Image 1 (cartoon, helix red, strand yellow):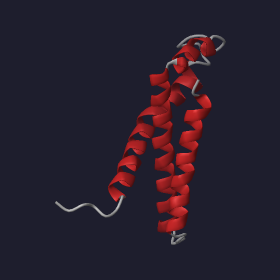
Image 2 (cartoon, one colour; image 1 turned 120 degrees about the vertical axis):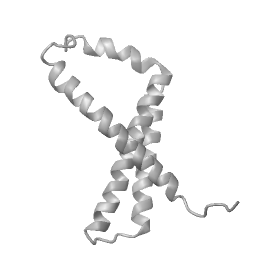
Image 3 (cartoon, one colour; image 1 turned 90 degrees about the horizontal axis):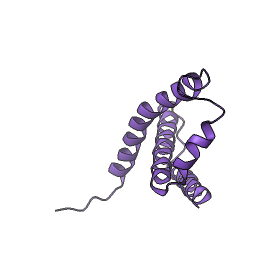
Image 4 (spheres, one colour; image 1 turned 180 degrees about the vertical axis):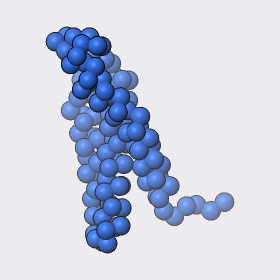
Length: 116
């Protein structure tokens, strides 16, 4: 069995996961936070922080939130790179790796900053 010599499957896996999660999670968040919460359908906007805050104290929940944010950022960086490529703005592989590094730094920073 030959060993793969590139990381394209991993890049595309993270891209696909980010796109799927963004398509499923973001519309629900927009509906809940922009429409249902302000109009009092799902509770009071005044007590929202007290209700949601204990969820983020749970380590597993926080890891899931960080993972969701990470794959959505990865999807954004990957799509941004390929949009530039489709517009014939060839920025090179270093820019691609810089975008991915930025996403990794943001993910790690989010993980470290909120943990505790």
